Length: 307
Image (cartoon, rainbow, N blue to C red; front, side, top):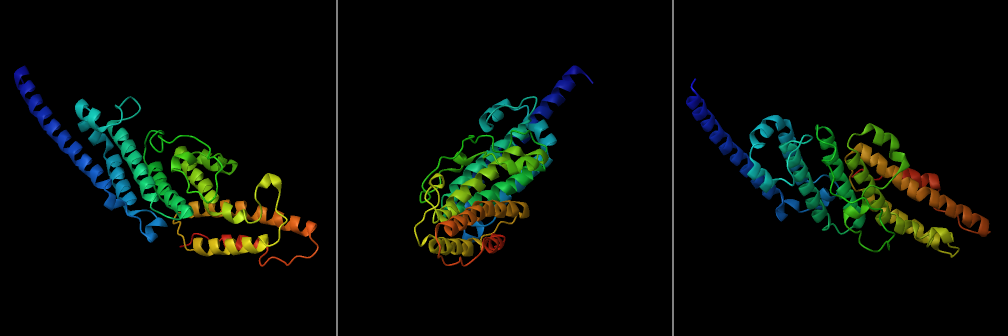
């Protein structure tokens, strides 16, 4: 084969490759645009307690990209102009074009979930919605061979400030990466550390939104001790059963997440309630017994999130 024939064949090949690359980039941009339409992110009461259908669709698309990563990267990697137009940064030794595309899509998905969650009026249910969806994303990402920076990279690591329980929770990035010693074993076993810590941050925010108001019926501020005023137990029992009755109907489909949530609620409620009863017994001679013992309340909390 002469040099001129080789050059001619190579030119035809490159033209076809460029056309295919343009078609793939165009298709991906259309898919991305279709996923960010407001109509795709309406949240019904059922979806607030589960995984949003658009989250499932986007992750199916991302999984498709991941399964075809080698072929797609071969086609897309040479088109520097398209990369600059469509990617947040350029591929390098550690990440391919498809890796960065997946990261950008997940980042887009996170932002859409946060926007959608703002339409959920109950603050506690808002965090359940975010937990369910981020847990689903995290599970899918863990099954893909992606660079460790792919998931939840753009969120700041800040500890939430104490706020009035009546206030609407601030955006989810204010609740990232809450340290919890109970997570150490799971952290060592889970390669998707960012996703694990993100979900833990939502658990902390959920407890603050849903169960801190219940516990505040017994005390104003923990350092000042429990209140001695009468009627606190009545108010606590009323608020506890109202919250329990509502949240027993909320759905957390992931069994591991459901277990973590129940454990966190129990650790939030039962020690404080037991301490209040002990203080109450020592400081007052005649008090009516509580309607439920601490053990009975714990058994009720084990029924949460069944849907």
